[in-house]
Image (cartoon, rainbow, N blue to C red; front, side):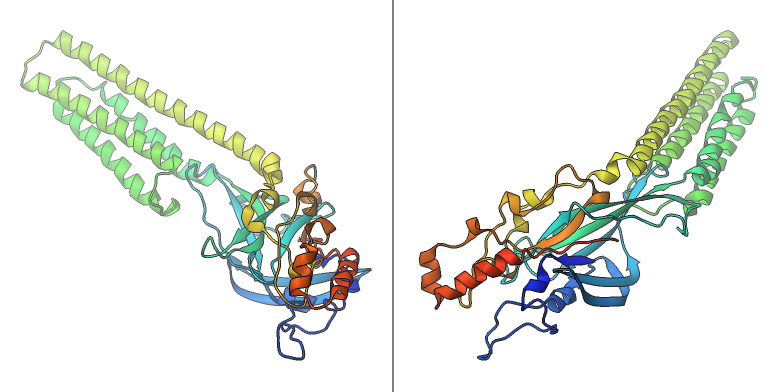
Length: 400
């Protein structure tokens, strides 16, 4: 839901016409209605969208733009810490008014917004933990850097429940990687038995890798669980090589039994150290990732809303030709000043509202000489100034 603050006081916004306005001579007036703005709303990352409701209503002196849609939205996951990962489920709402076009729009987040997610009826709660908080962000979208469109990003955070992957992938890999250590307890003279057991354990690890591949994401980089499984497989390979070296020393070098037993103990201790170090290292990584993601999902991360409205140069310009310096001929637009943003830095996303505001303060008006050169009547500027003071056009997301 968006809001035009003071929109009912504007005779052009209240028109029940969703086309681009033209004057009697067929020239565009660049003063569209609220219905036209409502039709410019799009969802770039959505597919198979179904519009459930689309209307403009009154709210005192304001105009509300209400649009309810249903569909699928896509997000690229970052799975480096899988299965201890947290993801942003984003919905992008853009408006087809280019920042450098004739009717640019500036989006703002109002302090009175109230947004949230209904996590109680989340269908995948057995696999993901959905945060009930919703983060708002202001950005621009577009295929090129020269032509950008203002957009609002709605982000809900989900944290994966790693129990299934731990039990079915990580734990079996841990146990199989521990088995080669027991091969060193077989008599040194039984070279064939030691090698056959080591190779059987290695083949078991490979079979486990193939069997569990369907549970892992098909991506071109290694996740945390991939590194864990590969490290355990490397420990099995090293243990197998140690047993092969002992076999060579027995059959070819004819080394003394005392030296062979000592070397076997060294190999055994090295393998145990590697296995313990691997488990401790990845356990610490998993605990850190889990604790970090728990704070991210339920705490501060969902409140981090960058002030891109003030920092991005592409969020330029006044909408509606500034609504405070509108002219019947000639186009003029400027970047909003700092106080036009009306963004409360202390406000959180759960209490902020998204506004499309049109600059209306006098410090941004073009010079009088410019007005006289491009505007046939000075009275038109005075009327525009009066309308601008009464029409601080903002759109507000009241609820999501």
